[in-house]
Length: 52
Image (cartoon, rainbow, N blue to C red; front, side):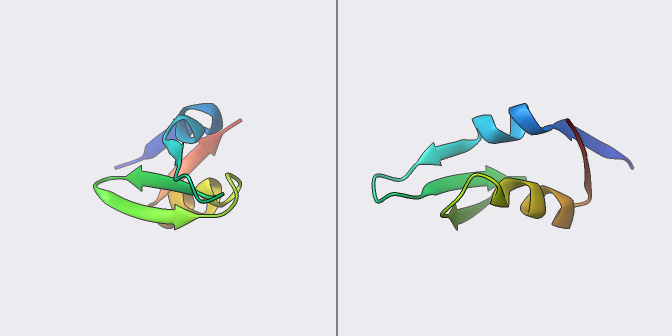
């Protein structure tokens, strides 16, 4: 199965955590990240092709 997502749509899933970072959830797994750019790496690790 090919999974694609736009970078903008992925960023919508990065919610401020109130401590200077973000909480990002993808496919039921939640990540604590410091920078929204980490979203790309996480999505690619899940097998997504990112569309910019």
